[in-house]
Length: 116
Image (cartoon, rainbow, N blue to C red):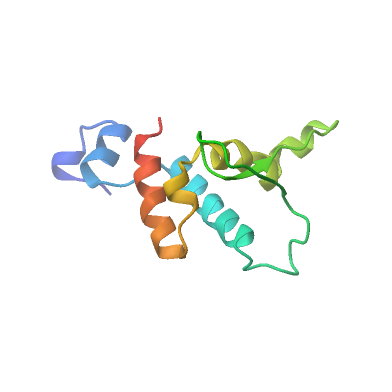
């Protein structure tokens, strides 16, 4: 499938050469985009009370923090709302406070490229 100059490279080097994110980062990107849309009001009825919001005017991090819930069962640790909270809270304010989805995607790509 991948022939020529990329055949001998490792997975990470192929991704870097092609300029794409790994599958894990692409999945996280999609989840963060869905979180942005939810928090900006795109899903008013579908996910009523999906996230607990923490509004903050602190100078560090973004002003739209999401609170992490604690569950007794291990199976709930795999839920969308639990998986995305830590990553969302680490996003910079410039990425989260944008008015449109297109601007969010652009900022998110820059923030994800700096992640491990």
